[in-house]
Image 1 (tube, protein in one colour):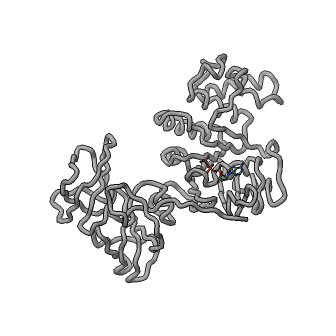
Image 2: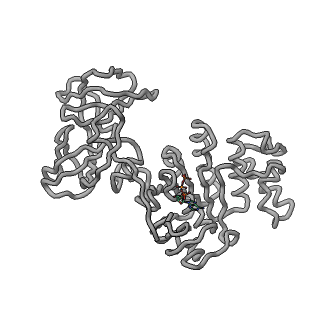
Image 3: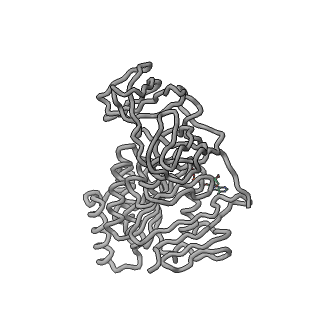
Length: 374
Ligand code: ATP
């Protein structure tokens, strides 16, 4: 059995500038993938190459084992069996809901078409608005109609380009879980572009982090968060800091927080200088602990508060405590590190990102501008 989608080392360019550079993606039938990355990194271009709206300059794209794109070769979008949902819904304003959903079903018999539209409206929970026009519906409802319209012809693969970006935060989260359920229920395969990692976590079986046209890591959400392949991925997925450290032996590394003992994510020679990824949940609150830190910043998040703490080494860490622990800025508190899997990166970066209040040495580093030329 072939994977449903195989994108093999493709590159695509605008003029002489590569927008996608040697990218690979794999999806099995029924899986949902998400493409995550900063603005301009190439997410939409990648989606468009898969849909057939953009040519590739090298590599191969296969859908169910059939080559649909290669250098100087492209199967037309209509022949790829791919559906697409855009961020602006793109519903036809002069057609009502059921006519919009039926749009791609021209080849079907009337009774069959009616059944398919009815089934999809029931799946998205909007049977009651079938006679309404797009302007009479909320953004969330319009997006669900757009999804139903794309699913109606039973595409093998559904591509969604920032489908929730016009919706408010609560609606985004709700709809991303709903869309996952609907895609799974329809037994199709999905690839979703998003800026938002919470959406990606809610929807995806696999997530790809793209930066400057390159796929940095294509992996499960768990691995991206706990086993990021580099500091770029670590900084893009979740929160945390990189603390400078030194390897003492196979399981021991020292840094401004403590001497940490655990499994290393990658092997590092004894004595090597490294950056150690410390996530906010790796720092536990413990009043009696001899390890002290000063609160320099805090952000209330409802059930918990994220604190920026300054260590005696001058380094800063983030700590996530339940919000019933209330500490003031300037207060000294007791903490304990609880790091089981120790993620280490070779020290190789210059640019560092940080909130204003903390030591510039320690925060995860920022995306930097980059261009690749063909
Ligand atoms: P966003 O999240 O902002 O939508 P993106 O990750 O989807 O961005 P793309 O739209 O794929 O990024 O763009 C990738 C790069 O290609 C960017 O540098 C962009 O400026 C460039 N680009 C996109 N479309 C064109 C075009 N039609 N002509 C020339 N350059 C383009």
